[in-house]
Image (cartoon, rainbow, N blue to C red; front, side, top):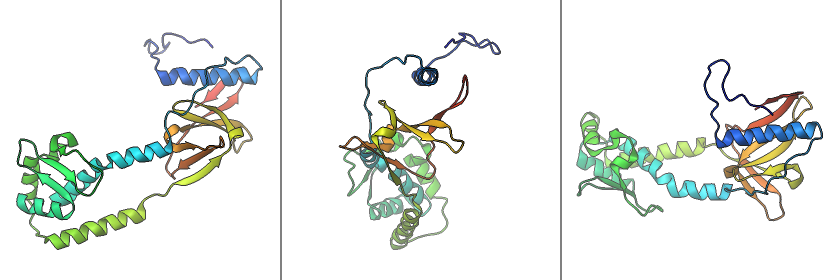
Length: 234
């Protein structure tokens, strides 16, 4: 495989990153396999992540998203800053504005460290901007109404939440396993062989050597397909 160090059209220098190198290795291996050439044996790798670890990560870090969602909701259903804090408390969001920075804590959750308003990385969640936005509201809501509206909103979102599909992939179907991806060989509709790259966060390796793959309807995976003699489509 020969690469031109300079793009003949733009004259830009070839830029290579880790993903490009891995992709070129994959293409080289598939061409070598097609023509019966020797394939370089590389050190065996194992998945560096798993679906189980990914779910733990989401659970531990989802509080930032929930805080933002509650702040967004409260800024539209409060009429003063004190009213905002009272309703936040009713939604189990503790607001502490007694120090230099306003902080937020989801009570009853796994969150142990308070989050500063500035760390939410959106200026509209800063105390001064929240107060300015709240003062523009003309419709008043009681605490009870706000709690009911929030619970209704959460119930609708839960019903619409996309469910995961679990697929068992047996060991013989695996082409290789790397730190970031699981490579699964499949037959396409055109009776051609292709390899799907499944991110490690979507895979749990079972004790018997098989793999449990978790996907959602909108998930997209890259794949390599041998189209013709020297052409590979990614």
